[in-house]
Length: 335
Image 1: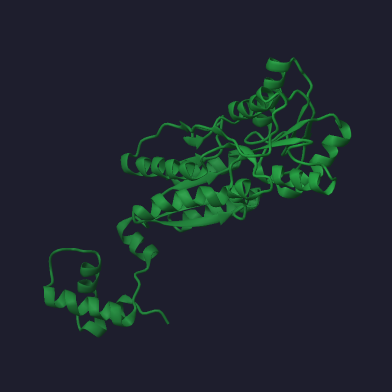
Image 2: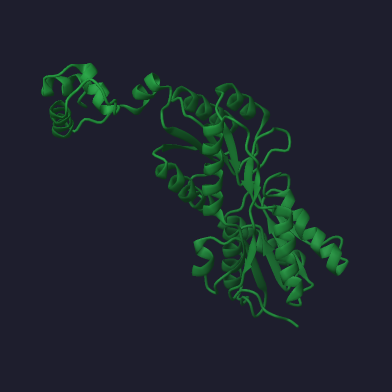
């Protein structure tokens, strides 16, 4: 059984009220000798105050809720590093929820977070549906989006400009002399990382090469397995392709694995550029050239915005984060 505040009071031979005042750093109502007795009792009994119960009295639980569509994903992991860094530095804790991109599960988690009386919400990498927005609004706590945004709802966000970033990645391949360029992507209807990245790719191909219908093959996700499958499909349809833009690093690594199995050398026979700049990008063979979005910094900035809203009770401004090309060894120069 976990010790209670009553156990501490009994052990130190003081009242529960005295223990409460000492633990909450109230300056009056006890001596230094009494404080020492109470803290010795806390240590001896290994008493840990219940954050939720304490929060009910103080109207603050010092916790925030974070919702991810896939907590096992590498993008989520990087974002969470940044979120936890800021949250813990400010003396708060994080409740992490894995929604699996399922509407009912997301709503269940929002209900749970409301019951836990979290002070704020960070919503990551997923479209904000109307029912999500209504649930968040009903909680009456600030919310900030990270690696996503909502054109329909007035929620501040922190993310890169996906269309512009994809345009940059495609332009890089063109600058290296590639013209027969194809793209492998996640689901094209995805308004967060699907359509904007495809749109940026197509815009660059049209603006710079006059190609109004470059090959784009879309999977149901952005995984390694999706990259394996889409690489084969793209090359079957467009065998003259010299370079591939993958909408995620995991897809790019999958594409390179498929190339290896087909005895196609990267970058000698075909070049590959990814998107994200995850750790696996520099660990792959060859090391992957990629479009970097600063995921940890995005997590940090989003958390800072959330705490700013908590402090001021006012809406905060959205932030567009910078992106850049990280050159490694997976793109061949044809010029």
